[in-house]
Image: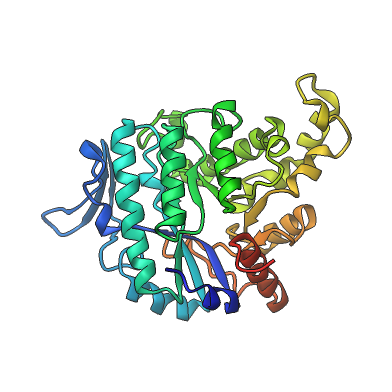
Length: 338
């Protein structure tokens, strides 16, 4: 169980920290996941027909809590909320396999939190291809496992504004927890996407940003925030390209015929943007300043992609007062302060 007193006292809280769990290996049927090594000792990680080569999870902060805690100390991070690995969202596989995986994943995550309750908490993986099952697993994860929120991908097999998802959003509000949304590389277990994304790591470099921008636009233009005004949703990487597209989205509110009535005024999109939460994993202080200019700091959160290829600490890159503001914001989002 998460030590809420320790979380409440933390001066830096990282909400963008993925974990790979030994207890979830082999729990998604033919999709694995599975870790192995070549004859030369090079690591690989398999999810269904997809194989990631050269990334070593075993012995790293992704899988070893002691290593994670040591690296957190070095980065000046008091507390982390661990989240599912984007390669294992499994939103497109057989529902029964997805349900089994999410149950075992969340059980394993809860065990790690129980072993380190003063430093770690967790977000629940959910089988979004079965909305009723996703609601049930979220309720179990919150009430029985003491995880702190829901965690899903940007591509769950249906638009994020699909009315069929309303019972899920209602469950998130009823349980009084945040919903975190983060992309996965296209084609892991779902549609392959644009073939141009398969070179130069563009599925990560531009694909993620595009998915996040589409998610933000869908949540706002699709009326999700309007239908569920009390929901707290956080997007990774400051919402992708929201900063550079804000003028275009604002203009659409007064120029495009499909815009819902409640958004048909100047600046409506930007106003709605203030209802969402965003993390700071943007790699460049110039971009962070731009994000703050447009979105403010009231719902800005520390995000590092801890141990990932593009990790950055941010606690060392921003003024101390902003770091404390983000910690206070995280406490509000995670329901440990008002």
